[in-house]
Length: 394
Ligand SMILES: [Zn+2]
Image (cartoon, rainbow, N blue to C red; front, side):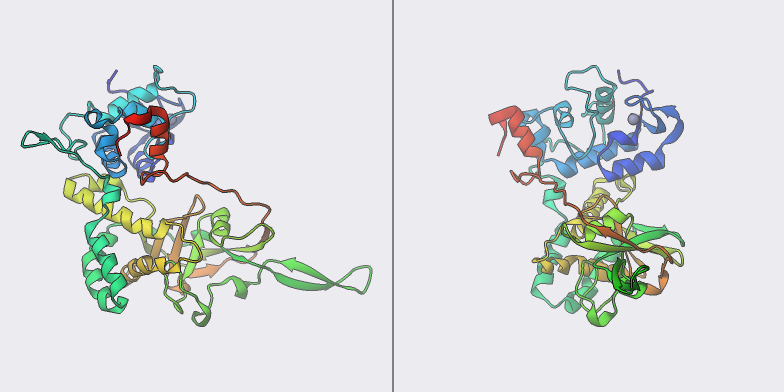
């Protein structure tokens, strides 16, 4: 049923870039063929959407996963499991006559038809060739080499050449964040306010959120090295939601966490590494390499770093330096811990404390999200092997 009238909403997509695609390219006034909600939808035969989905398949999967000639499975089976591209409604099963599967067929558009992003390496001199690695695992060659250089040299020596290599690409992610936009900031701890009791003369100590000066960005002389800043360079780290701000300071159960809100005093231009507008990169295979590069950059900011591995900041700090040298005001990236986004603002005068926004939270318990490590493809291979047993190629 590949007719032209299937429209799909963003809730059936898992990747941030596909969600952004639907919201930027879609229209209102139609109901989604999968969930019947009246939301922003896009035709499932939209050429750019098809190309973006193909791009993400190449980004996440090596060919042997989906090419049956190499022991792979078909895309219905891939999208039947939890995967980083689509979200299958819980009620839908593999062999259902569900609109979800019609949408999948539309998105893949017959697989073999002419497209910019190839899913199959094809043949070289009669031999069947293979995309043996996903684009994600292949990485971005320039960046992989640069990281090696960075480990072997003082950053000041390599910064100029890295700036030349990467600043134009980072500039493509530029987004304006409007004045007045409000973000949150958290700090573990609290202030104490002493009050005289009403009925007795005893002094009562009350826990209150940190006072303003204790929750502003710290002065440089006490600023430790962070994801975007070197030691003794103080920037504003803010989060899009209170929950994200709290998660970012990694409190333990039993901790009190002070929260305050801050607003931007003017429009700022940031490098947006939280999503990239994938459709701007699917015009050619070469340009799709740039998309892969940007996701590698984003990974440096998103990767959860344990407190004992702070030298991992070396790479994100380098990118931060390049972004700042390019004249941008900050960086936006997905939180590695919470669901929201973080924003770093270089110039602290562009951020203002919001009066009466201080709150104190008590951490009752943690929740953990784990994936068992089986292979480089994050939980994918695990579900794959459990379902299909020994046909998996190593
Ligand atoms: Zn829907």
